[in-house]
Length: 117
Image (cartoon, rainbow, N blue to C red; front, side, top):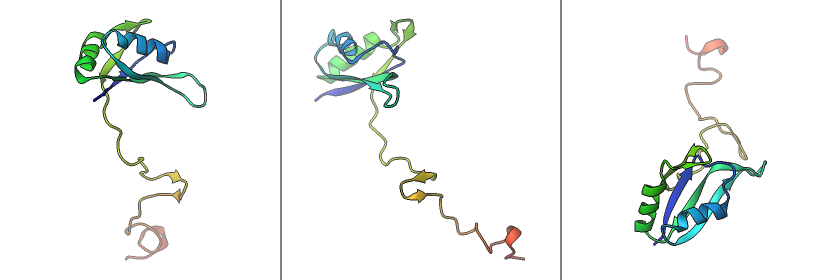
């Protein structure tokens, strides 16, 4: 089973291939991906590496966490699973404005519009 590792605070010069080569010293790398900004095409400064086993992943984390790469101290730890949902907690979306519905707010419930006296 493969283990996914988060690598953060990367310099913008790091590419998928350099990330893969740095981690391959510790064992089999299934994949290495630096996250890129869709609009600018520039690195977002973090990425993910998938290692062949948990033991190899832990060795890489222990050795590389805090290491200086181009003057930046990188963060290396186990990746957390994605949060479920999509985080639509109000605001605009494809379905329109999605403010939470409250029964105590609106017309006729007090305030400037009259209502309770």
